[in-house]
Image 1 (tube, rainbow, N blue to C red):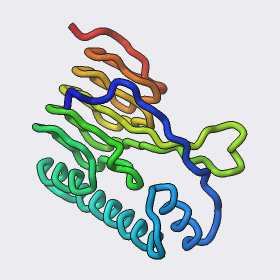
Image 2: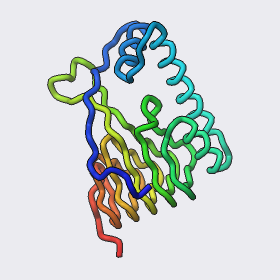
Image 3: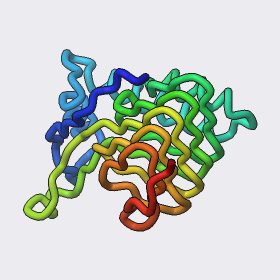
Image 4: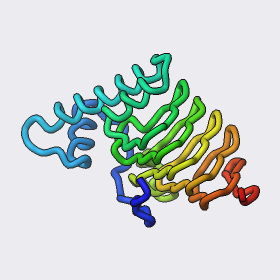
Length: 186
């Protein structure tokens, strides 16, 4: 997992519109690269699979089973990873999440790979997809939220209930809303 790309690129995404489910599925399927007459149905089935595998993962009593379900969804997960209860890894784009070796996600964490505000907010906020990279030996403590486009460096610790909206360098303790480096870990 060390060969992870050091530059994270944001990819433009469509804004969220209040519209019928069939139209929304068609637009999302197209944005995700699905084509053909049954694109919306295929996309809908993949989305439901990801949603239900994430739900099942949360009910598993053992971290190893949670890892198996998240890998089945497309999340790239290294070796010796612990995933606690109630960890939500993006339902729409789980394939954009990379978790290194010996990482611990304590529980009640949220990892998002997208920001898709309503059309009304278009003039103030960008809509985008971006990967999340959690490098080796990272500890994500309880209640941490990680937003799209973030890289957490090797050996870092994110303190409880922090909001990670920017990259965290290697071997650091970060905390707060938004998370800021508190000290270097030697």
